[in-house]
Image 1 (spheres, one colour):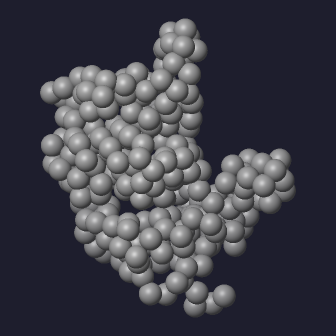
Image 2 (cartoon, helix red, strand yellow):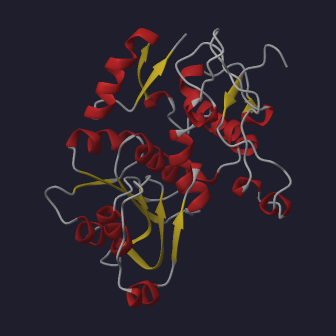
Length: 282
C-alpha cells in the first residue's frame, strides 16, 4: 500500500512454474520484473539494473519485487538485504545449510563473502575461516564472525584451511570470488562429504577443470547459490528480526552514506576494496 516501507528484490516468483508448484519458490524458474517499461520524458526506454533500477528517485517494479518490512529499522542497513548481503547470508544459511558446530571457510571477503561469514555465525558455525589476499579485509571479517584468517597471498589456502580443521578440511567452503582458481581451492579445502558453494559470479569465458575421479571420490555436494537461494517474503523480515535482536550486524556493512553526486567516487572505492557498501540516501 502507499506509504509502506519495502525492500526491493530482483526475483519476483511466478507461483506457477514447476519449482513453485513443488513448494520451492526460492528456485522459481520463471521470475519476472515489471512488464511496463520506464521511460525518460522524451520516451526513451530505460533498462533498470536487475529489473529494479538504481541511482534514481523513482522506479517501476512488479508487485512481487516488493517485500514489506517494519518501519523501525535503519533503512540504509536493512536495504542491503535486497542484493549482496542476502546473497552472502543465504549462501551460508540456505544453500550450504550450515549447521551448529560445523566449520566453514569463505574465500573472498568482499561484501558478499563477509555476509557469508555473518551468515555462518548466525547459523551456529564454531570455526569460521576467512580467506583473502588483503589483510585489512581479513581484519574486518573478524567483526562479522571469522574465528581464523588466512592470507592466501602468503599461505597455501587449502593447506591452511586443513590445518585449522584438524587436517580434514572444512565442512563447508564458500567461494565468494568466482574464479577457477578459487573454486579449485574450495573443492580441495573441504572435508570428505563436505559442501562447496559457489556464490561469486564467474565471467562467461571461465572454464573449470577437475579430475572426475576426485569429484566422485570426495563425495559431498557441489552447489551454486543464486541470490542466496532466498525467498524474500520468508527471509527479509527474519533477518531484520535477527538484526534487531543484535545477532546480525547489518550496520557494519554500511561503510558510508552518500548522495547521488558521490557515486563515481564510490565506484572507485569499491574497485579499490576500501568499502563494504556505500549506501545512497535520497
